[in-house]
Length: 381
Image 1: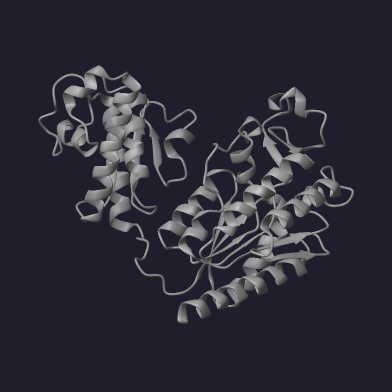
Image 2: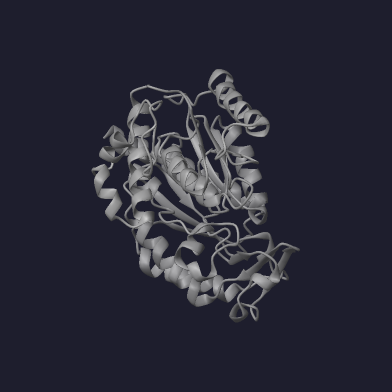
């Protein structure tokens, strides 16, 4: 697929740049009048539309691309249009840096090109390119494809280190009941990946114990050091009508890099020094009231059964009584705001325990199963 806009069209391309532009509802001659970034985005949109259509027609099994900064942007946009599980290899001059904007929450393999191919293939690039070709061929030949139909119920669970106790206990209980489980780390990409797989109909129920990314979405000025600002958390399950039980795990703090990355206005708050490269800053009462409003709005739009479960003795390991982020007043402000804005539309369960206490996970799994039964009853009627 030729996605260039300068120079001559490659005679070796199966899909010309004209076809790529047409897939974005534009003409090639129009690109010359556009600002460079807009022209590149047009090609990226066309490439993504074509990739999605051709894969749906079973025209290819995997995708590989080579590019610099611009080519990487266009190619990875096309890769991100494909389902998770499709082999994707990107050979790039920028693969040794911050690749989060290119990868997003998709399973894209980034390979650093080491040298530029501007001067043609040489002893270095020949080795790199052959390795990349071997990688994508190997993925297509031996990779396990995601099944088109799922044999049993799949529960998506969100996790943090601070909510690990609850997640581990819930996993034990769900697996014992015969469920397939997928754990997503709530670092920005994890939650988005879960939402994507919900839309792909891979995940059939959600135990959203750690919807932490909602904080970065609502307050981008205090966003996580490692998480991009994404949108749409807590929406996919509702749109797809699948059962979802939400807890406030990880909503109690922002995540930053080293302490010098924390804005000065936040340094007077309660801080947990997680490690030399990671500090957690306590969310305020006002911030949590706002988070509760957004959560209520999104959950009340759900087409399927939804509920919230709240541990009253702390939402993460760091916010236990005596912990560095302990703030029961801020937690209470969240609960009060959530009840006010959710009304009677969303059941809210309050438990007199900490999130990582065993009884919390036990109750959460019980409620989730009841939500699933409620969904089955509605569908049968």
